Image 1 (cartoon, rainbow, N blue to C red):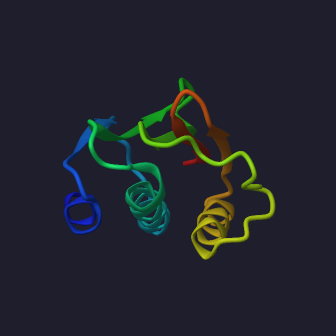
Image 2: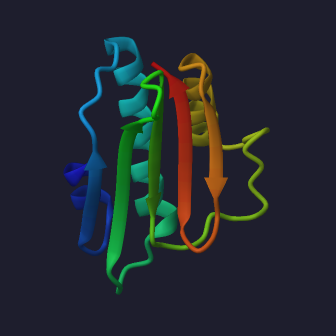
Length: 124
């Protein structure tokens, strides 16, 4: 993520991580990495406007049963546009994210306010 923010962002981006130790199969880990990469890249292109304290956050934890994991990814930049339909994404990046979440047998929820946050749950 550091290289993404260094390459694409016009301002310094702080990264807040709250990642619990979780054993994830390699195939799922690759999909998760691609999702996080795409969301981080989109943050720099569409969310952060520079001139402020830009923050990207990511958390990963298991639920109380230990069978389901939740990945939260977001930023404090511009709100995610209301006109973007996650059920029928038009951009290649959002299509990729949706496809990867399906591969995980997961579900995605988008919180648009007060900050953009993607909440992705998937079975371990």
